[in-house]
Amino acid sequence: MNPDIRTIRVSPGRRQRHVHELCGSTEIAGSGPHNHRFAAVTCEAKPGSGNNHIHEVWFRTDFYRGHYHEFSGKTGGADRIGDRHVHFITGATTENEGHRHEFRTATLIEDPIAEK
Image: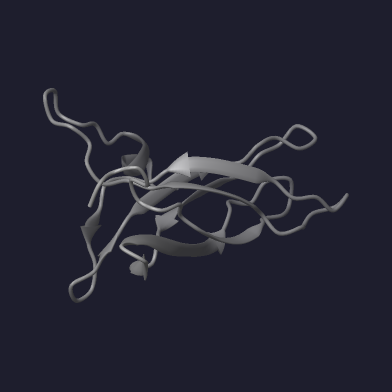
């Protein structure tokens, strides 16, 4: 896990601008096979390759039989959806209780009620 992601602060008077919500469920794993759910908000946009951008993401899953998992990583570049965009993200959680979970999801549409 990258602790820097959890400690990013927005300077006083500076408004947060470009983030996405994301949510999903992990794949089934572990003894007593199970999955976990997660929900988060990405960090602000950072330059990606070419003319694109990415977002850093950190989240902790829900609990199952006394344990949870964490993830720290980055989204892929922006994928256009009409006049908006989303980001695909895939990865694996930290190991806990002798297992980890893989997942794949997409962010929600950026600022869905704003006029463009």
